[in-house]
Length: 187
Image 1 (tube, rainbow, N blue to C red):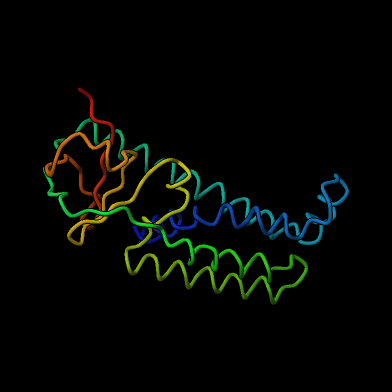
Image 2 (cartoon, rainbow, N blue to C red):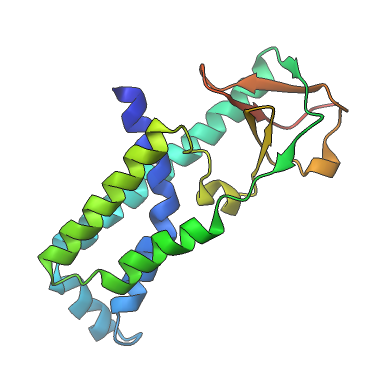
């Protein structure tokens, strides 16, 4: 259960830009009075969104830091990467995921809040159940690339052309998933 909560929190970090866009979409102008009026329209909503942002951001940073450290300290398994390709985190899906809350969420309207919460929960369950939480836009913003090969996934800051080994890269497996992490290789 804790693993699923962690994965959901990690997935929610991809919502951080959406929360900012929802705030901006409902802001009348960039004045202090407009910000104050928007926050007072539903202070509870903004507190929850801020809490989700902080929790998911901390989870994302901790997750990457943990695997960077784990990569440095543990033995790495050679994996065949001859057939890999750069995966797009589904920009169309992300834009659609953005468009719905940005266009429909009104802080003063409980039905739109509930509707968007249901959509967010459905997307979270989908991401966790289908093990696609690694298609996370926050990772992309942090400079990570997602590659696939032979049904496996590699997350790394290395660009494909910068990989230091040919077909025998060293990686650590993330739990028992099909996801691998390649950190900085020290010479």
